[in-house]
Image 1 (cartoon, one colour):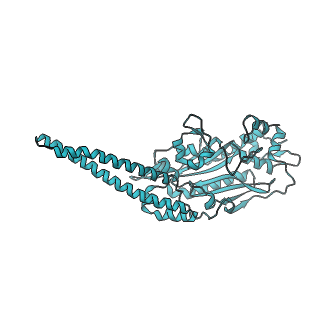
Image 2: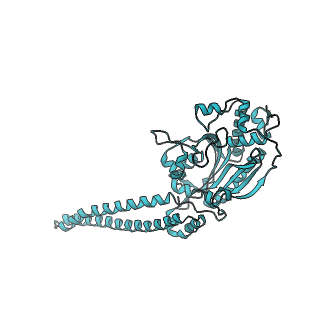
Image 3: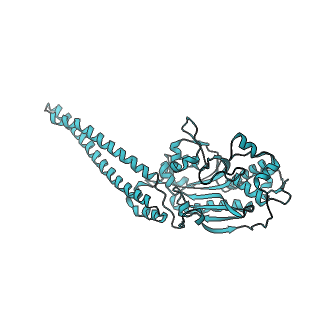
Length: 422
Protein backbone atom coordinates (compact mmCIF):
# COMPACT_ATOMS: atom_id res chain seq x y z
CA UNK A 1 0.00 0.00 0.00
CA UNK A 2 1.01 3.64 -0.25
CA UNK A 3 2.76 5.25 2.72
CA UNK A 4 0.35 7.58 4.53
CA UNK A 5 3.22 10.02 5.06
CA UNK A 6 3.64 10.33 1.29
CA UNK A 7 -0.09 11.02 0.92
CA UNK A 8 0.17 13.76 3.56
CA UNK A 9 3.30 15.26 2.06
CA UNK A 10 2.57 15.15 -1.67
CA UNK A 11 -0.88 13.81 -2.69
CA UNK A 12 -0.52 15.40 -6.13
CA UNK A 13 2.10 12.79 -7.17
CA UNK A 14 -0.43 10.05 -6.43
CA UNK A 15 -3.27 11.96 -8.08
CA UNK A 16 -1.20 12.42 -11.23
CA UNK A 17 -0.54 8.66 -11.38
CA UNK A 18 -4.27 7.97 -11.00
CA UNK A 19 -5.02 10.44 -13.79
CA UNK A 20 -2.65 8.50 -16.07
CA UNK A 21 -4.61 5.36 -15.21
CA UNK A 22 -7.78 7.29 -16.12
CA UNK A 23 -9.39 6.13 -12.89
CA UNK A 24 -11.65 8.93 -11.55
CA UNK A 25 -13.16 6.69 -8.87
CA UNK A 26 -9.79 6.19 -7.19
CA UNK A 27 -9.05 9.93 -7.41
CA UNK A 28 -12.22 10.39 -5.34
CA UNK A 29 -10.91 7.72 -2.95
CA UNK A 30 -7.73 9.74 -2.53
CA UNK A 31 -9.71 12.90 -1.77
CA UNK A 32 -11.86 11.03 0.77
CA UNK A 33 -8.74 9.47 2.31
CA UNK A 34 -7.07 12.88 2.71
CA UNK A 35 -10.14 14.27 4.50
CA UNK A 36 -10.41 11.22 6.77
CA UNK A 37 -6.71 11.42 7.63
CA UNK A 38 -7.02 15.06 8.65
CA UNK A 39 -10.00 14.17 10.83
CA UNK A 40 -8.07 11.26 12.39
CA UNK A 41 -5.08 13.51 13.18
CA UNK A 42 -7.43 16.07 14.74
CA UNK A 43 -9.00 13.36 16.93
CA UNK A 44 -5.55 12.09 17.85
CA UNK A 45 -4.60 15.54 19.10
CA UNK A 46 -7.83 15.82 21.11
CA UNK A 47 -7.27 12.37 22.66
CA UNK A 48 -3.69 13.24 23.62
CA UNK A 49 -4.85 16.52 25.18
CA UNK A 50 -7.54 14.73 27.23
CA UNK A 51 -5.05 12.09 28.37
CA UNK A 52 -2.68 14.82 29.45
CA UNK A 53 -5.54 16.54 31.26
CA UNK A 54 -6.45 13.26 32.98
CA UNK A 55 -2.88 12.82 34.19
CA UNK A 56 -2.73 16.43 35.40
CA UNK A 57 -6.02 16.08 37.31
CA UNK A 58 -4.85 12.79 38.90
CA UNK A 59 -1.74 14.57 40.18
CA UNK A 60 -3.90 17.46 41.42
CA UNK A 61 -6.27 15.08 43.26
CA UNK A 62 -3.33 13.34 44.97
CA UNK A 63 -1.91 16.71 45.96
CA UNK A 64 -5.22 17.90 47.42
CA UNK A 65 -5.70 14.65 49.34
CA UNK A 66 -2.24 14.95 50.87
CA UNK A 67 -3.11 18.49 51.90
CA UNK A 68 -6.47 17.21 53.21
CA UNK A 69 -8.24 19.63 50.90
CA UNK A 70 -11.58 18.92 49.16
CA UNK A 71 -11.25 17.49 45.62
CA UNK A 72 -14.90 16.92 44.71
CA UNK A 73 -14.76 19.02 41.54
CA UNK A 74 -11.54 17.37 40.34
CA UNK A 75 -12.79 13.85 41.10
CA UNK A 76 -16.01 14.49 39.15
CA UNK A 77 -14.00 15.72 36.16
CA UNK A 78 -11.64 12.76 36.42
CA UNK A 79 -14.62 10.36 36.22
CA UNK A 80 -15.96 12.11 33.11
CA UNK A 81 -12.70 12.07 31.15
CA UNK A 82 -12.38 8.29 30.48
CA UNK A 83 -15.77 8.22 28.70
CA UNK A 84 -14.84 11.27 26.59
CA UNK A 85 -11.52 9.64 25.68
CA UNK A 86 -13.20 6.30 24.90
CA UNK A 87 -15.83 7.98 22.69
CA UNK A 88 -13.13 9.80 20.72
CA UNK A 89 -11.03 6.61 20.41
CA UNK A 90 -14.01 4.66 19.05
CA UNK A 91 -14.69 7.43 16.54
CA UNK A 92 -11.02 7.48 15.50
CA UNK A 93 -10.95 3.67 15.22
CA UNK A 94 -13.86 3.69 12.74
CA UNK A 95 -12.13 6.40 10.70
CA UNK A 96 -8.88 4.40 10.71
CA UNK A 97 -10.76 1.38 9.31
CA UNK A 98 -11.98 3.52 6.41
CA UNK A 99 -8.46 4.91 5.90
CA UNK A 100 -6.98 1.41 5.82
CA UNK A 101 -9.68 0.28 3.36
CA UNK A 102 -8.59 2.99 0.94
CA UNK A 103 -4.86 2.48 1.57
CA UNK A 104 -5.11 -1.24 0.79
CA UNK A 105 -6.87 -0.56 -2.51
CA UNK A 106 -5.20 2.53 -3.94
CA UNK A 107 -2.71 1.40 -6.62
CA UNK A 108 1.04 1.94 -6.56
CA UNK A 109 2.50 5.07 -8.16
CA UNK A 110 3.36 4.18 -11.73
CA UNK A 111 6.78 4.76 -13.21
CA UNK A 112 6.80 7.50 -15.83
CA UNK A 113 7.75 4.99 -18.57
CA UNK A 114 4.54 2.94 -18.20
CA UNK A 115 2.55 3.42 -21.44
CA UNK A 116 -1.15 4.24 -21.39
CA UNK A 117 -3.47 1.52 -22.65
CA UNK A 118 -6.89 0.09 -21.91
CA UNK A 119 -5.92 -3.60 -21.81
CA UNK A 120 -3.23 -6.18 -22.66
CA UNK A 121 -3.70 -5.56 -26.38
CA UNK A 122 -2.09 -2.14 -25.92
CA UNK A 123 1.08 -3.30 -24.14
CA UNK A 124 4.15 -1.80 -25.83
CA UNK A 125 6.61 -4.17 -27.53
CA UNK A 126 10.17 -3.13 -26.61
CA UNK A 127 12.22 -5.71 -28.51
CA UNK A 128 12.15 -9.13 -30.10
CA UNK A 129 14.78 -11.89 -30.08
CA UNK A 130 15.23 -15.12 -31.99
CA UNK A 131 14.44 -16.48 -35.42
CA UNK A 132 10.81 -17.39 -36.03
CA UNK A 133 10.85 -20.98 -37.32
CA UNK A 134 9.30 -21.84 -40.67
CA UNK A 135 7.01 -24.68 -39.77
CA UNK A 136 4.44 -26.86 -41.40
CA UNK A 137 1.42 -28.04 -39.47
CA UNK A 138 2.46 -28.88 -35.90
CA UNK A 139 0.88 -31.29 -33.47
CA UNK A 140 -0.43 -29.81 -30.21
CA UNK A 141 1.90 -30.09 -27.23
CA UNK A 142 -0.84 -32.02 -25.37
CA UNK A 143 -0.93 -34.65 -28.13
CA UNK A 144 2.86 -34.89 -28.07
CA UNK A 145 2.85 -35.50 -24.30
CA UNK A 146 0.17 -38.19 -24.61
CA UNK A 147 1.97 -39.89 -27.48
CA UNK A 148 4.94 -40.33 -25.16
CA UNK A 149 2.74 -41.46 -22.28
CA UNK A 150 -0.96 -42.00 -23.07
CA UNK A 151 -3.68 -40.44 -20.88
CA UNK A 152 -1.33 -37.92 -19.20
CA UNK A 153 -4.06 -35.27 -19.49
CA UNK A 154 -7.22 -37.35 -19.79
CA UNK A 155 -6.53 -39.40 -16.65
CA UNK A 156 -5.54 -36.24 -14.71
CA UNK A 157 -8.84 -34.67 -15.75
CA UNK A 158 -10.66 -37.80 -14.55
CA UNK A 159 -9.00 -37.97 -11.13
CA UNK A 160 -8.43 -34.26 -10.37
CA UNK A 161 -10.37 -32.20 -12.93
CA UNK A 162 -9.50 -29.98 -15.86
CA UNK A 163 -6.32 -27.95 -15.54
CA UNK A 164 -4.18 -30.77 -14.10
CA UNK A 165 -1.75 -33.16 -15.76
CA UNK A 166 0.65 -36.07 -15.29
CA UNK A 167 4.23 -35.98 -16.60
CA UNK A 168 6.12 -39.25 -17.05
CA UNK A 169 9.48 -40.54 -18.17
CA UNK A 170 11.51 -38.25 -20.44
CA UNK A 171 8.92 -35.44 -20.43
CA UNK A 172 9.15 -35.44 -16.63
CA UNK A 173 12.95 -35.45 -16.92
CA UNK A 174 12.68 -32.43 -19.22
CA UNK A 175 10.69 -30.54 -16.57
CA UNK A 176 13.24 -31.43 -13.88
CA UNK A 177 16.03 -30.30 -16.21
CA UNK A 178 14.35 -26.90 -16.60
CA UNK A 179 14.14 -26.52 -12.83
CA UNK A 180 17.77 -27.51 -12.21
CA UNK A 181 19.03 -25.39 -15.10
CA UNK A 182 17.31 -22.19 -13.91
CA UNK A 183 18.28 -22.73 -10.25
CA UNK A 184 21.92 -23.28 -11.23
CA UNK A 185 21.80 -20.19 -13.44
CA UNK A 186 20.60 -17.94 -10.59
CA UNK A 187 22.73 -19.37 -7.78
CA UNK A 188 25.85 -18.83 -9.91
CA UNK A 189 24.81 -15.17 -10.09
CA UNK A 190 24.66 -14.90 -6.30
CA UNK A 191 20.97 -15.57 -5.69
CA UNK A 192 20.27 -17.56 -2.51
CA UNK A 193 18.11 -20.65 -3.07
CA UNK A 194 14.89 -20.78 -1.05
CA UNK A 195 12.17 -23.43 -0.75
CA UNK A 196 9.35 -21.43 0.93
CA UNK A 197 6.14 -22.63 2.63
CA UNK A 198 3.47 -23.50 0.10
CA UNK A 199 0.70 -22.04 2.25
CA UNK A 200 0.19 -18.57 3.72
CA UNK A 201 -2.11 -17.10 6.34
CA UNK A 202 -4.58 -14.44 5.25
CA UNK A 203 -2.79 -11.58 7.05
CA UNK A 204 0.48 -12.35 5.24
CA UNK A 205 -1.31 -12.73 1.91
CA UNK A 206 -2.95 -9.33 2.37
CA UNK A 207 0.57 -7.97 2.80
CA UNK A 208 1.84 -9.08 -0.59
CA UNK A 209 -1.11 -8.51 -2.90
CA UNK A 210 -4.59 -7.09 -3.22
CA UNK A 211 -6.38 -10.09 -1.76
CA UNK A 212 -9.83 -8.66 -2.53
CA UNK A 213 -8.91 -8.83 -6.21
CA UNK A 214 -6.69 -11.94 -6.07
CA UNK A 215 -8.69 -14.15 -3.70
CA UNK A 216 -10.82 -15.68 -6.46
CA UNK A 217 -7.62 -17.20 -7.89
CA UNK A 218 -6.46 -18.74 -4.60
CA UNK A 219 -7.26 -22.13 -3.12
CA UNK A 220 -8.46 -21.74 0.48
CA UNK A 221 -7.83 -24.58 2.95
CA UNK A 222 -11.23 -25.40 4.42
CA UNK A 223 -11.46 -24.72 8.16
CA UNK A 224 -7.95 -23.24 8.29
CA UNK A 225 -6.52 -19.72 8.07
CA UNK A 226 -4.39 -20.85 5.13
CA UNK A 227 -4.21 -20.39 1.36
CA UNK A 228 -2.15 -22.41 -1.13
CA UNK A 229 0.41 -20.06 -2.66
CA UNK A 230 0.01 -18.80 -6.23
CA UNK A 231 3.74 -18.06 -6.54
CA UNK A 232 6.82 -18.27 -4.28
CA UNK A 233 7.06 -14.47 -4.57
CA UNK A 234 4.35 -14.21 -1.91
CA UNK A 235 5.90 -16.22 0.96
CA UNK A 236 9.37 -14.85 0.13
CA UNK A 237 8.08 -11.26 0.38
CA UNK A 238 6.45 -12.11 3.72
CA UNK A 239 9.66 -13.55 5.23
CA UNK A 240 10.77 -10.16 6.62
CA UNK A 241 7.33 -8.83 7.60
CA UNK A 242 7.41 -6.60 10.72
CA UNK A 243 11.21 -6.45 10.58
CA UNK A 244 13.83 -3.72 10.13
CA UNK A 245 16.85 -4.74 8.02
CA UNK A 246 20.33 -3.26 8.09
CA UNK A 247 21.33 -1.23 5.06
CA UNK A 248 24.69 -3.03 4.86
CA UNK A 249 22.85 -6.34 4.29
CA UNK A 250 21.13 -5.07 1.15
CA UNK A 251 20.44 -6.19 -1.49
CA UNK A 252 19.06 -9.60 -0.55
CA UNK A 253 18.71 -11.69 -3.73
CA UNK A 254 16.67 -14.89 -3.61
CA UNK A 255 15.93 -17.70 -6.08
CA UNK A 256 12.70 -19.29 -4.90
CA UNK A 257 11.37 -22.65 -6.05
CA UNK A 258 7.85 -23.91 -5.39
CA UNK A 259 4.80 -25.56 -6.79
CA UNK A 260 2.15 -22.91 -7.51
CA UNK A 261 -1.62 -23.30 -7.27
CA UNK A 262 -4.17 -21.10 -9.05
CA UNK A 263 -7.87 -21.42 -9.76
CA UNK A 264 -7.35 -19.28 -12.87
CA UNK A 265 -11.06 -18.50 -13.14
CA UNK A 266 -12.65 -15.57 -14.91
CA UNK A 267 -11.96 -14.29 -18.40
CA UNK A 268 -8.83 -16.42 -18.92
CA UNK A 269 -10.46 -19.83 -18.53
CA UNK A 270 -8.45 -23.06 -18.36
CA UNK A 271 -6.96 -25.05 -21.25
CA UNK A 272 -8.80 -28.38 -21.22
CA UNK A 273 -5.80 -30.34 -22.43
CA UNK A 274 -2.57 -28.44 -22.14
CA UNK A 275 0.22 -26.98 -20.06
CA UNK A 276 -0.22 -23.26 -20.60
CA UNK A 277 -2.90 -22.23 -18.09
CA UNK A 278 -3.22 -24.86 -15.37
CA UNK A 279 -4.21 -25.13 -11.72
CA UNK A 280 -0.82 -26.49 -10.58
CA UNK A 281 2.66 -25.85 -11.94
CA UNK A 282 6.28 -25.49 -10.83
CA UNK A 283 8.18 -22.22 -11.00
CA UNK A 284 11.59 -20.76 -10.20
CA UNK A 285 11.25 -17.14 -9.07
CA UNK A 286 13.68 -14.25 -8.66
CA UNK A 287 13.15 -11.89 -5.72
CA UNK A 288 15.13 -8.88 -4.43
CA UNK A 289 14.88 -6.75 -1.27
CA UNK A 290 16.88 -3.56 -1.86
CA UNK A 291 17.63 0.08 -1.07
CA UNK A 292 15.05 2.26 -2.90
CA UNK A 293 17.74 4.12 -4.85
CA UNK A 294 18.83 0.82 -6.46
CA UNK A 295 15.46 -0.72 -7.34
CA UNK A 296 15.23 0.41 -10.97
CA UNK A 297 18.73 -0.91 -11.61
CA UNK A 298 17.69 -4.28 -10.17
CA UNK A 299 14.47 -4.29 -12.17
CA UNK A 300 16.56 -4.31 -15.34
CA UNK A 301 18.83 -6.99 -13.84
CA UNK A 302 15.87 -9.31 -13.21
CA UNK A 303 14.69 -8.82 -16.79
CA UNK A 304 18.19 -9.45 -18.14
CA UNK A 305 18.40 -12.72 -16.16
CA UNK A 306 15.02 -13.89 -17.47
CA UNK A 307 15.97 -13.01 -21.05
CA UNK A 308 19.29 -14.81 -20.75
CA UNK A 309 17.59 -17.98 -19.50
CA UNK A 310 15.17 -17.88 -22.44
CA UNK A 311 17.94 -17.12 -24.94
CA UNK A 312 20.03 -20.07 -23.78
CA UNK A 313 16.98 -22.28 -24.38
CA UNK A 314 16.81 -20.72 -27.88
CA UNK A 315 13.12 -19.88 -27.58
CA UNK A 316 12.12 -16.85 -29.73
CA UNK A 317 10.52 -14.16 -27.58
CA UNK A 318 9.58 -10.53 -27.25
CA UNK A 319 9.65 -8.14 -24.26
CA UNK A 320 6.62 -5.93 -23.62
CA UNK A 321 6.16 -2.95 -21.30
CA UNK A 322 2.82 -3.50 -19.55
CA UNK A 323 0.35 -0.65 -20.06
CA UNK A 324 -1.73 1.17 -17.45
CA UNK A 325 -4.86 -0.90 -18.06
CA UNK A 326 -3.06 -4.23 -17.59
CA UNK A 327 -0.69 -3.28 -14.76
CA UNK A 328 -2.71 -4.05 -11.63
CA UNK A 329 -2.27 -2.20 -8.35
CA UNK A 330 0.91 -3.67 -6.79
CA UNK A 331 3.64 -3.02 -9.39
CA UNK A 332 4.98 0.41 -10.29
CA UNK A 333 6.18 -1.05 -13.60
CA UNK A 334 6.09 -4.50 -15.15
CA UNK A 335 7.70 -6.23 -18.11
CA UNK A 336 6.42 -9.46 -19.64
CA UNK A 337 8.44 -11.85 -21.76
CA UNK A 338 6.27 -13.59 -24.33
CA UNK A 339 7.49 -16.75 -26.08
CA UNK A 340 6.67 -17.43 -29.70
CA UNK A 341 4.35 -20.43 -30.07
CA UNK A 342 4.74 -21.63 -33.68
CA UNK A 343 1.60 -23.79 -33.80
CA UNK A 344 -0.61 -20.74 -33.18
CA UNK A 345 1.90 -18.29 -34.68
CA UNK A 346 1.41 -16.09 -31.62
CA UNK A 347 3.43 -14.76 -28.69
CA UNK A 348 2.29 -15.98 -25.25
CA UNK A 349 3.34 -14.66 -21.84
CA UNK A 350 5.79 -16.92 -19.99
CA UNK A 351 7.53 -14.47 -17.60
CA UNK A 352 6.49 -11.40 -15.59
CA UNK A 353 9.02 -8.98 -14.08
CA UNK A 354 7.82 -6.33 -11.59
CA UNK A 355 9.19 -3.51 -9.47
CA UNK A 356 6.76 -3.11 -6.57
CA UNK A 357 8.81 -0.25 -5.03
CA UNK A 358 7.71 0.20 -1.38
CA UNK A 359 4.12 -1.00 -1.95
CA UNK A 360 4.49 -4.52 -0.52
CA UNK A 361 6.93 -3.34 2.15
CA UNK A 362 4.44 -0.78 3.48
CA UNK A 363 1.76 -3.47 3.74
CA UNK A 364 4.16 -5.96 5.36
CA UNK A 365 5.89 -3.29 7.52
CA UNK A 366 9.38 -4.12 6.20
CA UNK A 367 11.89 -1.32 6.72
CA UNK A 368 15.62 -0.75 6.66
CA UNK A 369 17.71 1.48 8.88
CA UNK A 370 19.52 4.41 7.26
CA UNK A 371 21.34 6.36 9.97
CA UNK A 372 18.72 6.85 12.67
CA UNK A 373 15.80 6.81 10.23
CA UNK A 374 13.65 3.83 9.32
CA UNK A 375 12.51 3.70 5.68
CA UNK A 376 10.42 1.25 3.70
CA UNK A 377 12.48 -1.16 1.62
CA UNK A 378 11.78 -1.86 -2.07
CA UNK A 379 10.78 -5.32 -3.33
CA UNK A 380 11.12 -6.71 -6.85
CA UNK A 381 10.16 -10.03 -8.40
CA UNK A 382 10.40 -11.84 -11.70
CA UNK A 383 9.72 -15.28 -13.03
CA UNK A 384 12.95 -17.03 -13.89
CA UNK A 385 11.18 -20.01 -15.43
CA UNK A 386 7.64 -21.40 -15.16
CA UNK A 387 8.09 -25.01 -16.20
CA UNK A 388 4.66 -25.78 -17.69
CA UNK A 389 4.68 -22.79 -20.05
CA UNK A 390 8.31 -23.31 -21.01
CA UNK A 391 7.61 -26.99 -21.66
CA UNK A 392 4.91 -25.99 -24.10
CA UNK A 393 7.30 -23.56 -25.83
CA UNK A 394 9.96 -26.28 -26.14
CA UNK A 395 7.54 -28.99 -27.33
CA UNK A 396 6.35 -26.69 -30.11
CA UNK A 397 9.59 -24.93 -31.08
CA UNK A 398 11.72 -28.11 -30.96
CA UNK A 399 9.15 -30.43 -32.58
CA UNK A 400 10.45 -32.50 -35.51
CA UNK A 401 8.55 -33.86 -38.51
CA UNK A 402 8.58 -37.39 -37.09
CA UNK A 403 7.05 -36.17 -33.81
CA UNK A 404 10.30 -36.39 -31.85
CA UNK A 405 11.50 -33.46 -29.71
CA UNK A 406 15.04 -32.14 -29.74
CA UNK A 407 16.36 -31.35 -26.27
CA UNK A 408 17.80 -27.81 -25.91
CA UNK A 409 21.59 -28.02 -25.64
CA UNK A 410 21.74 -26.37 -22.19
CA UNK A 411 19.36 -29.01 -20.79
CA UNK A 412 21.10 -32.11 -22.15
CA UNK A 413 23.56 -32.44 -19.24
CA UNK A 414 20.57 -32.48 -16.84
CA UNK A 415 18.99 -35.34 -18.84
CA UNK A 416 21.86 -37.83 -18.89
CA UNK A 417 22.93 -36.36 -22.26
CA UNK A 418 19.66 -37.30 -23.98
CA UNK A 419 19.61 -35.22 -27.17
CA UNK A 420 16.28 -36.26 -28.66
CA UNK A 421 13.05 -37.45 -27.05
CA UNK A 422 11.62 -40.01 -29.47
